[in-house]
Image (cartoon, rainbow, N blue to C red; front, side, top):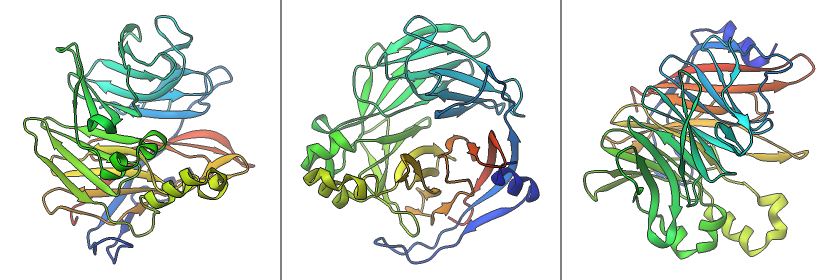
Length: 355
């Protein structure tokens, strides 16, 4: 049995806390982030329906988990208790098929959106019937999609036009673009091209974003041109390393030593209107595969500060994938070892009362 699952079942109410302290290369940070285990369940896989190489997950209000599988080029759904694993899509280029599922989002109560890098589109599916409901063309660079009541918010960095996100809704034909772009991108276009990942999330009135090459979290107000930002403190994770990115661009031969020597943003979510949570990953290449720890960190927009990051207690052997629904963080954890091969769903509540 996976050692992560063993730990979670042995400590079903355990709470992990990251206490404040002096941040590295940032202002002092005395906030606290905590996570409390809700549950950990095994996914019921079979020889024909199983989880391969996961690109992304999404979670609905009932706790069902949707999985973008890069190896089988299809999307799966599993119930909250780990049972009922079923494929939603098939591999291919036709209706109801996907070629390269890279990101998932839930729109309202009924639609699943699958970002398909092969088609350069978001393929839409009815979550009740599992039938296709059309597609939305995405003719611009994008790294992640997130859902809302009436559409999608897309991470879409275009440094030349100062665009960080695009909004796609059911009521407008053209996307609404917005956001601000950090100076590191506008002054160094190659960094924007090579390291332009941007994670986004939204609520009724704002869009929040975090960039791969910036140590700042941004909040853009939809009803005005107002923008807020908070420098995200770094204590134990690597943080943004634009100087390393520039060195890598100057001398590509250093790629084995420098590639991904910074914290990669994996997920951004809204806990409430006043707090946002970010999951980052510190990857290291070993034997042709990525390993490394992941961290969760909360930003409080009222106090304009970030809590200290907390390393998530999951195996670093195979990178987990994460999704948020309110203050619940869900991880899809895979493990392949001498004692077990399988997939588990782990859930925590993110606590930020003292942030």
